Length: 213
Image (cartoon, rainbow, N blue to C red; front, top):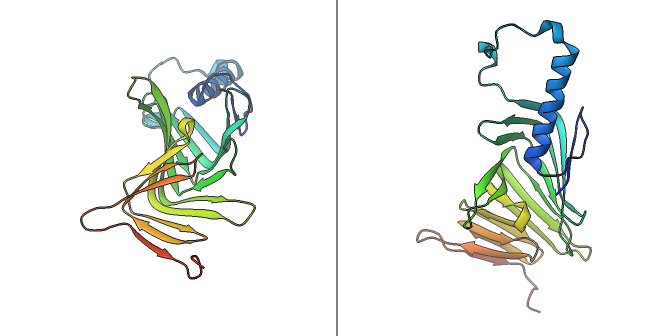
């Protein structure tokens, strides 16, 4: 899996998103040590004004991740990224993510805030999770005019599996009509959307006139 992060630093490491951020930190560290060697303070303790600050901060970042075969997996743009190494979490400001499939058109996801973290799988491994929050939109459009637009307050995306889910209320618009549900599980590569309901709210679909003619 290859990645690039485009900002004031550009490179292509060979492992994961976390390797990319670690490398950026190493580059910054070498600049500090060799560019300002005479100014390194004698006290190794972290200054109080830096406590709670991110280990890595980049503005107008573009993160590109590739599959093992070299094909694009996703491209993520963010006004700001703040990475905290101890917690292994990266916070995103106004993220916009394009998730590329193998056969179908890409999905475009956006929100006001988000983060990237790791989640344990059933086998005990870890996988990357991109969590989007506030005014989440998910869109896909085909050349023949078919489209899907999804709106939610939060959404978890698992890029490696092309899978997304939310337990929040969702609204899905297509060229056929509109569906309201209290949750969603989506296999994005296959275009399979599974809706959830509750005792208070059932899945509700409005079909546009003329669909059954």
